[in-house]
Image (cartoon, rainbow, N blue to C red):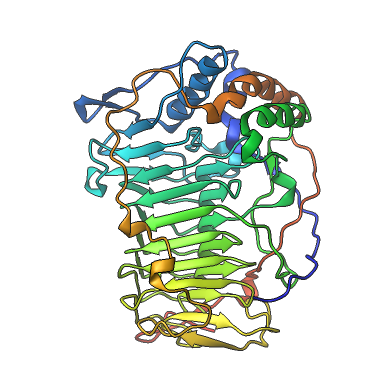
Length: 449
């Protein structure tokens, strides 16, 4: 990998994060949230679950309070059922984040599953639609392990569907999920971590240090996050290690993104048996700043409209494993690379017209720095644990203890302090409108670069 260089430092204006959007809204109405719990589903009265993401997130907050007050014990695992044949409307044609109709799903617990219907099948039709953010993994508060979404569809997002700036210890999985018809956002998934959102604690003293460090932090009213964007200056190769995200048997279809389908900025990304079809973006899957990528189990890329190829790997990042059954065909781009475009050292392909690199064709597994298959952990070889039952109580695991202490304080502080400016470091690639491909007519071509 390339030697690390000093990062460029850029000041950004942060926006009020949606993490406590519902608390702010309720407080302004002098209403206190109450625990609701799973309810009979409108389209299947025999099944209890959630048909509103705000209620789901509220319940998780309140569950954490019970743990903190000693009213409930921790559970080994948690299952949250999303009601089948349900559209979770987070709002479309929004003017700003504050206009979002429902809060995103913000997982709180280790070993938790968010499943669509009884069995987590995509056919059960649980559609999360619209909104600026649909799912958020947040490092500002805690990190979580072994979180799985299964059988959920994501549509019509206006910014970032899954915002993943969790601690590097965080690991998440999406199984049998679908991203379709997202045509107004920047990314479908964005994975990164920044030194300004580190809480300053490590797993060995995880829970004690979590409360101490974050209590002081929350007194500053810092539920703010930089809206993820690519910098206008050439990116730095040095990056912070980010979280792990795995996608198994997921579909990414008919999406038009301003920047990338999946942004893996310094994280560990694994694609297992996924389908990427008819998406338009500068890069369908972008791996930058010391990112790691694993692709296997017949993952396919077809008829995508991109600049260099469906997958981009910058000179600092690493392809951990590429199985020979990976397929790429009919992808349109100036380089006509049907595989992984690997940037050569010394070039900045995503930000400069001076670019050079190699196309690693799918099916060959001839790229440099690829480990043997037996050395790579593959998601497909590990079947997901089937939860024994749906959550019906009000307990939570130790990973949410801090929330019970900080939530009441945070709600008041946010209302009182509002937005403040912070200095944060973030680098990447910028897709200016002038650099974006323009549509042209002609069979097999959607735009000309």
